Length: 289
Ligand SMILES: [Fe+2]
Ligand SMILES: [Fe+2]
Image 1 (cartoon, rainbow, N blue to C red):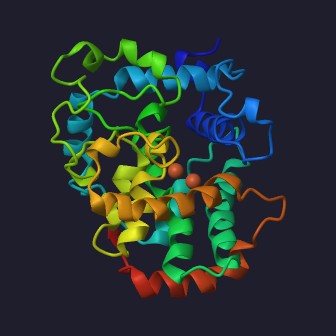
Image 2: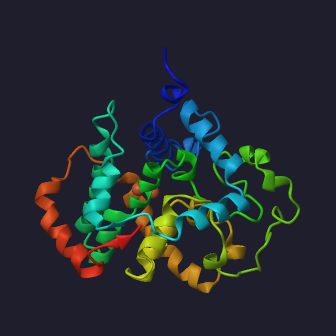
């Protein structure tokens, strides 16, 4: 007899389903599909993804985000090098999914290698390699909807340009006058650094790395899933000039994150010395997670 836990989709399935969905259906490569197919997520075929967004939009409240920040941003769980964090992330592989190790590491490697191939700065390449390491949150037992997915500001109006925005009607903040106005708890153009984003791997990893990388790299990490901003041009009313100056960097990163999947798989063992040097240049031996 199967247990309730066994009937739950595994974190790895949800992450993969979400990533494929975002790439193929929400933000496909321009010109890869007819314009009419663009953002064609009205009739999603993937129940897993739909259910994922339903839970994400229902539970990511202002109070929930504050609680998760209190819980995780002390960064007192473990000290890890990036290599250890990559290994740790790879333990997301579970008994029944031998391919996941490859998927997670390959996504990071392929992202980094495509950035390198295009001749970008070395910190940009490094950002490609590490941008999803915040997914180690899954290994602390966090539900998938609190680790991956589009991110968005909480404490103010939920943009209807967010994927599956209809599910926000189930979010308790939606009916709260203080938390549902366009500005909500924020000042106009206060700057995104003063805005609480829905909780997930992006914000978490930003806090792990914030003292160590150039500002554009930190924006790429912190806002790479904030599609309503970098793709849909929403939430400018919360941005200041610094955010606007950083936005082109976030946009520059996005295609590498979404479209760098390649049948050619970079060989981690061969590349490891190059990345070890790069990590040594920018990051301390151990980081607090
Ligand atoms: Fe990500
Ligand atoms: Fe990614």
